Amino acid sequence: MKKTILVLLLSIAIATSVFAGGASDSAENYPSKPITVIVPFAPGGGSDVLTRSMMDYLELPNGQNFVVVNVDGASGYIGAQQAFNSPSDGYTILAHNPMDVVSYTLGGVTDQELYKDLDLVCGVADDFNFLVTNKDTGWKSLDDLVAYANANPGVVKVGNTGSLNSNMAECIRVLRALGIEDKVTIVPYNSGADNKVACMGGHVQLSCNTGADIQSSVLSGDLVPLVVISDRRSKALTDVPCTEELGIDVVTTKPRGFYAPSGVDPEKIAILKSAIEKVCANPEFQERVITLGLEVNYQDGEALQNKIDQWVVELTPVFDDMMSGNV
Image (tube, rainbow, N blue to C red; front, side):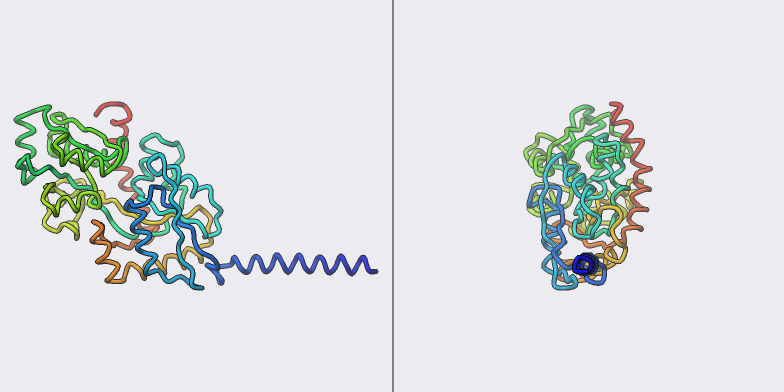
């Protein structure tokens, strides 16, 4: 009899423990602890600064907040893979540039389609690739660039951040549209900072680089922006024409947002989205983001994923050319 009672009490205790554990991890109590945000780059980069800036305005239930963990390596792939392998409990998400995630697959880093296998929670802000030149070239517009490249084939070097990635694909698409792809040489650099320094120092005459990387040098007059690759002008550099208004059909932006491991409770995702969207609606946060060379553009994950899927269709032939050595 005593043994039976003991077994019964033990069963009740286990059941209570399981129930309590389940309740604490339910959407109703979410989040009950800080949410780890994997930033797959070293501290100080665009995704890192953007995420840490959001934390000053974020209002999650139960007084919780984000905790940034920097996982640097392989141009962000190591951190992205770590996020993919994390538990689907809503307590680990990834801050990343979706076009970089696309590049891992199209550029041959992995056969896995991480940009589909991870769940895109939402987009937060847009960055843009610019074509910029150094002040010594004297170029003020794309027409000046084209005229010089045609008159001096093989002379112009174009700096690019990385290789076999969306940055290079976008650069190639614009050069093709201008009719000068075969008259210039693209030089890859490990980082946007290295790319910028190379252009400022005259090692390359043209650079394809992000607004976040070049904004301060444009404002100082050391770099001259010729065009922003986008369907609209950047709010951070409003005087620079965009490709669409110039009739160049290359308008891919560089969104930054958050991914989650596949299978997270949709109610938890909804809580995250709501809190992030409120941050994005904050005028003070919007102004702060512009100073980073970005602009706030909240987009629901599903809508942004649809846009990215279309960009993948446009980019795939260029990646095929790059992978086969045809560029």
